[in-house]
Length: 92
Image (cartoon, rainbow, N blue to C red; front, side):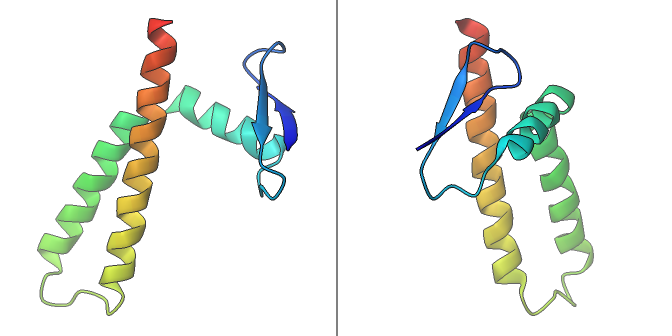
């Protein structure tokens, strides 16, 4: 397990699995990202763009639309998790 400091507070630490690809710089960027953009708002914006694209390009969708859809699905799940965890922190 790797232990990284949370950039919001010197007293918090994030423990990552030994094989994690995350490092302190990535944690700092994620922290800055969620301080700058609401995961809920980002999700809404991405879905709006995604569905508008699909509607407008319905006759000429790319051959890898299934892979693109799966990527969007996993990103939306990640943003949901961020939003839920941030909401829990607000309550605490």
